[in-house]
Image 1 (spheres, rainbow over the protein chains, first blue to last red):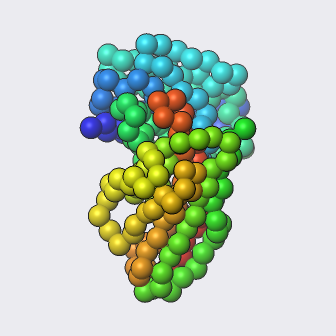
Image 2 (cartoon, rainbow over the protein chains, first blue to last red):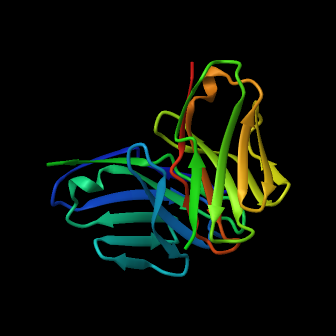
Image 3 (tube, rainbow over the protein chains, first blue to last red):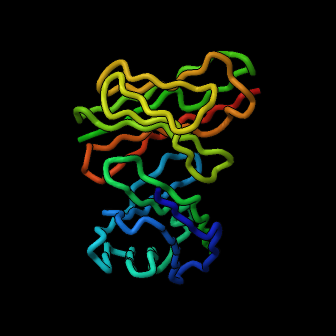
Length: 110
Length: 112
């Protein structure tokens, strides 16, 4: 089955770019996802990328997918204090539940 | 538009007491439904998922159970809570094969 790994912590200064990385094992994943969780709240779907794409951009968010290395990244441009949260990478294996990484806690320093 | 509700938002229960958490989804039919637990603000552990009324798959053996009495209702239960059941419980739904999964606001359970 799918296994998803993420680094646990990232700290950046306000205004800098943040890059959150994720590796996955199942090369047959059709979609890969990024979710954001603010303190005490549920998970919010930020973006997802279809496996035949290399890049997807949505305002300040850029998702890069390297299928050969099974590596996914989320870049947040001009990081703000409101971006402080836990970010989860997830992959799918068909119509079975998504497999989530353990989450990367992003801290933004003013 | 679709919305997902969970209640209660917070719950404090003594060890050995029963539990019932409810999740309902509006604005969609025949969704896949999921229960996750998140301990100490970290990773998500899938507990149960359901692809239809009365169809429950259990991912982790434990003293919890789930039921789906109606198409858009998913209930998490326990007959006797343990201290280790404390955590943040999240319900989620997905339109089958849509590849987009959405989460509810969560229930914070503290077992004392």
